[in-house]
Image (cartoon, rainbow, N blue to C red; front, side):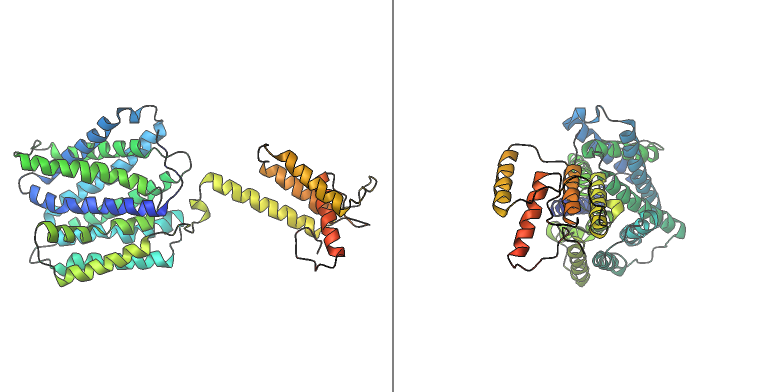
Length: 417
C-alpha cells in the first residue's frame, strides 16, 4: 500500500499544474470527438478504460484494502461521477461558455465550503488568487460571447451543483490525504475512476453504447483515458497530499489557459486580446496559490502526530513556567555538596562521553530532567546544586560560577523571577 510522504509543496504544485494541463488538453479533443460519439458514451468509456489501465499496471493495488478505504474511494468517485453526469446532461441546454464558467465557479465554492464545513481560514494571498482565477475564467468564457443560444436556468443550476460537488471532492481528497492514517493514493484513484465509469455508464446504456469507428478516434480516446483521466487523477491524488485544498482548486482552475495554449499551438488559432488578458490573470492566480515551503495551517489540518508533539511541548512549557514561579519547599534531605567549576566540567565531559552510542532519550525523560534542574535552581540556601542528578548539579554549579566571575546574568528559565 503506497503511502504519501511528508508534504512537499513545490512538488504538489507541479503535479496539480500537470493535472490542469492534462484536463485542458482533453477539452479540444472531446469537442471534436463528441461530434461523432455521444458525450455519455465517451465519458463512460474514458473513465472505465482509465481504471482498467491503472489496475493492469498494478494488479495488486486493491489487495488488502480496508472497508473504510473502499468506502472513501467510492464516495470520492460518486461525488465526481454525479457531477460529470449532471454537467453532461445540462450541457445540452447551455452554451459551452456558460457551462465552462459555471463549472469554473468551483474555485470560489471551495474556500467557502472549507470555511463553513471545516472552519479553515484561507490566507489573504490565496483569496487574491481565487479572485484572479475567477476573473481569468470570466475572460476565457463569458467574454468570448454566448451568442443567441438560450440559457436554461435549470441546466445552469445543475451545472453549479456539479461545481459544488467538484469542490467537495477537492476538500474531501485533501482531508483524506492528510489524515495521518496512511493514504493509499494509487488504490483510491483506481476505485474513484471505476466508480465514475460506472455512474456515467448508467447514462450511456439507455440507448446503447457506441464505440469509436476509426483508428484516429481510438487514439483520441486513448489520450483522454490514459493521459487526461488515469495520469491526471493519479497526479491529483498525490499532488493534493502536498498542497491544501483551496490552493489546489486555484491551480487546477487554470485549464482554460492550457486550452488556449493548445488551440494556438496545435490548431493554429489566432491569439486574441482575451487570451492575453485571461492568461495573465490565470498566471498571477497560480503564482499566488503556490504554497510556501512551510505553509501556515490551522490545528485541525495538522497531522495527528504533529498535534501530539505540540500538545506535549505546550504541556512542558506550562510545567516549566509553573516551576519558575512557584518555589518548592525546602528538601528534608541533607544539602548536597557544591561542586567546583573544574569538577563540573570534568563530570560533564565524562557524562557526555559515556552517553555516546546510546539511543535518544524520550521526550518525557527530557522534560523530567529539565524539571529537576529548574527545581534545584529555585531552591534557596547556599549553592544551587541540590538536584538529584549529577548532570543537574553540574549545570547549577557552572551557572553559579559564571555569575561569581562577574558575568551579567542572562534571562533563563533556570533563574527564579
